[in-house]
Image (cartoon, rainbow, N blue to C red; front, side, top):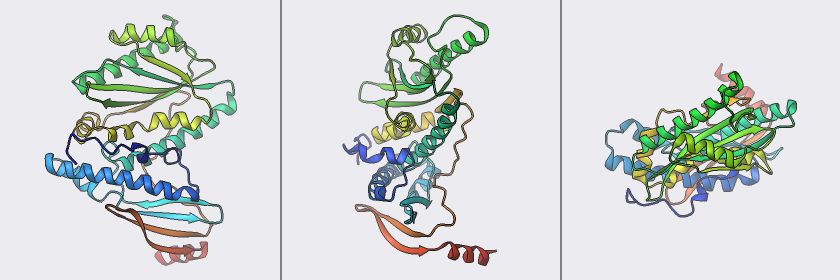
Amino acid sequence: MNQNEKPPADRSALAGPDDLAGGHETGKLPARLERYGSGRARGLQMLSHLRTDHHDQQKAIGRLRDCGDYLVFHDYFTIGDTRLVGANFCKQHLICPLCAMRRGAKYVENYMARLGVILKDRPDLRLFMVTYTVRNGDDLEERFQHLRRSLSRLHEKRRNYLKHGWGRTELANVEGAVWSFETTNKGKGWHPHVHCIYLAPSAPSQTALRAEWEKITEDSHQVDVRPIQGEPADGFVEVFKYAMKFSELSLADNVTAWQTFKGRRLVASFGLFRGVKVPEKLEDDPLDSLPYVERFYRYLPGSGYNLHACREHSPEDDQKAQAADE
């Protein structure tokens, strides 16, 4: 693939709600394998691009080379639950869609757990998705910093109002928030934006929030406010699939975005959503004391993940193996 060529048109194959919402249903395993295979294929395209045009990135190349070459699932057939318990992950989610899927799933899982706790005590609170943008530009670093500082100033207005009563802001009744940054580039310059989930008893006024945003940014009034209806997980999926959007860029632009955002904090929170711990581990936790079938898949370019080995396990087998290791 040419470095400026866009990825395949069927980008929906790169991530589905089940991946990001942590779905483990056994019947959905074939679809998950297909999506993981598409992510691995894109990762190999990125690997080829780095080898050709970025020889200095040997560490990233080495990690990406073996990422996702195998997957190990435990099929807990008595309850219809199949979990990804073993894999070789590079954890470079800005250039590896497979790792981005798994990382997003962990974020959704942990923020959904926190939401459940919050709503037990505060059933009056509702979720709202708010998206902020700034004007496109040729310098991604400058545009990102402009967006980040603008959002910080907006949220600082809320803190000052609640703490000191200084000025009125449309975010005064927001009691918790989590947000993530992402960017696109469709030939008209870099377009960084941020998706926020706000937890509040009533919706912020889009008109008032646009006015605040334009005053802060001085170049944009684009603010979209909408309630999250239906499954709350859908809203969290929209926020935490941010890294997947990088795979919609050309390979060259994807590398630019990776080098710009690498090591930076692209997810943040305040209020009732502050302090959610998301583990670095990308595998699922296995279930104890249940029989399972272990399925070992290998990735083959051009054909995706293929079943390589399969073996049934009982809790007694695992206990004997653990005792032997000790």
